[in-house]
Amino acid sequence: MHPLLGYGMLLEQNHPFSALAALLHHRFTKGYPEILPDPILPIKVDDTTISSARVYARYTGLADCYDAAKYRNNCHKSDKQRKRTSSEARDILLEENKDLAVLIDGLIKEGIFDLPLAA
Image (cartoon, rainbow, N blue to C red; front, side, top):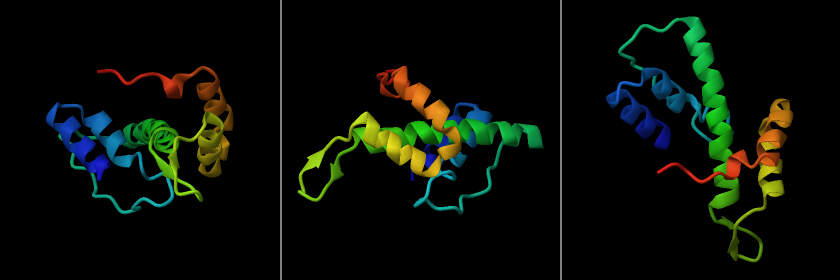
């Protein structure tokens, strides 16, 4: 499961806050395990840090969900695989993130979700 892989990699590189966000980013999406291990961090974290990490995790989860919805092949009734449109990906995001509709629409309008990944 990639949240655990990202968590481990970021901890190894001494990025505990990012590691926590990576671990938590699937907690905002249906269909993923709700039970993840408690983070073991090399630093003490307070409630504010945890709250901030949850915000970053949610935004990371949006990007991950958009990527999965739009760019990974998806089977449809015809059994042909095709990529979804931005509008279809938006609809999937909004199913579970209605409270972030303005943010999602802005990110799509500005093409943020469609930027190439950094090498």
